[in-house]
Amino acid sequence: GFTGSLQESGYLKIPLADVNRGSVIAIVQWGYHPLSQVKVPNDEQYPVTFPIPFPNAILAPPLATNVFYSTSGFNTVASVVSWSTAGATFVLDVPGGTSLGPTSERSNGFTWIAIGF
Image 1: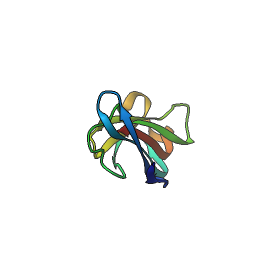
Image 2 (image 1 turned 60 degrees about the horizontal axis):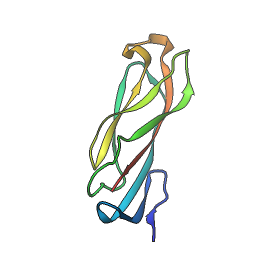
Image 3 (image 1 turned 90 degrees about the vertical axis):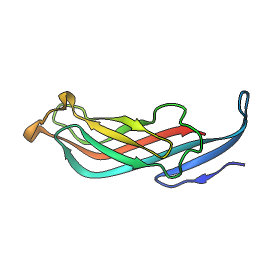
């Protein structure tokens, strides 16, 4: 059956018979990187370690989304910068990538998801 850890940052292991690879375990991992109403005046990078390493590979780049706190008319976006089987680096991307001074965006962090085997 399935095994996993249903936590704020967790994973689900799904055994399956892949048509090309044979018996494998697909893994879905997710997490929340909290930031308490932090100002994001520039593009800021944040490293994340996955709850468990993927034994083989990640099937697609991890996805992320900003957890909204407040905005001054711009929209902060969470994106992946780099990744490995053990973790990823995400960026909170402020439009233009330059300091917005007193109009800085605020974030409560970001959520992420990664799928591999």
